[in-house]
Length: 83
Image 1: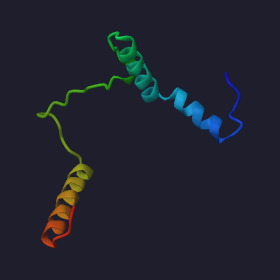
Image 2: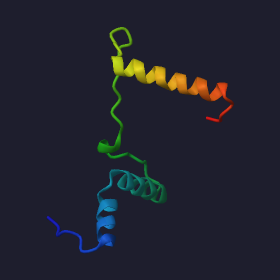
Image 3: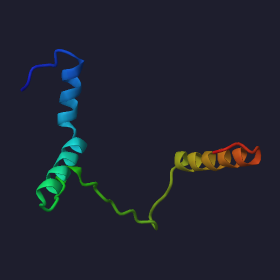
């Protein structure tokens, strides 16, 4: 276990080093420089879930949010405001 950061620079450095996105970027650059195939780390690969559209039932909150987005977009277009 490492000691707590002594200043803001150390805190930001630790956050950067622990970041999966930064490590993935470094792996990609390393593979490109050394001309080896790039294999992303398994933790950074997005998990894809299939949604069965037949059994999907939107909640009242989902329907309200969709209605609100459409309504605001329609009002902006009616009054000539940019999106």
